[in-house]
Image (cartoon, rainbow, N blue to C red; front, side, top):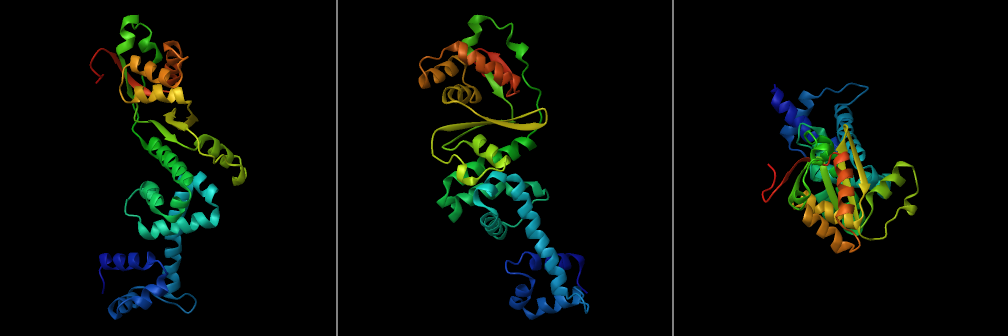
Length: 278
């Protein structure tokens, strides 16, 4: 009689076979077929192959459902049939191995980059990258945010060297396509034909606040300043980065952005001086 480990291994091989359980048995060696018939019982109403096929179908559809939940805008852009074909290819190429099914999509973006779908539609890859970032931000560890009042008493001469520490839940992504605009149209049930797919220069800020993941578009000057802040560069560099994009902007505008960043809990600590905050 087969051991539990042997039964589990046989069951796994059968349900992940890319062309179904019947095909798995047709291609299997006689010993595997005999073991399958010994372990899985047939009845007059329900053959063993059909029984195991139920689990095989459930396996693929469960993983498809996970990807559809994590990449809703990608599914919307591609359409039901094309997205199902893509996720089936992904499941076959990269079977689930993590105990946490929520991590199954971790390899989806790099896989999509090399897939025919991604090669033909780079905007889909860009949108998928933002959507996986949203998943990562949702799962990131909580940290106490930097309170806006923490900078209230900062002397004027300390501002140029002010450095900020970003929260693990703060991400800024550059892309030729606006994710917030596409996500809004998807959420509202709009037509894919109306999606803004003309390439441009877009930045999407993703962050978590009060247990909810949020995202918004960021202008090029604010993105330049925020990029400097996220990389640990001092306030003077943040102002210079914004000014390089738009020469009319000065420190007052960056201070205004900074208030919004702190209100959104994008940073966890600050320090003024030559050394970066711990």
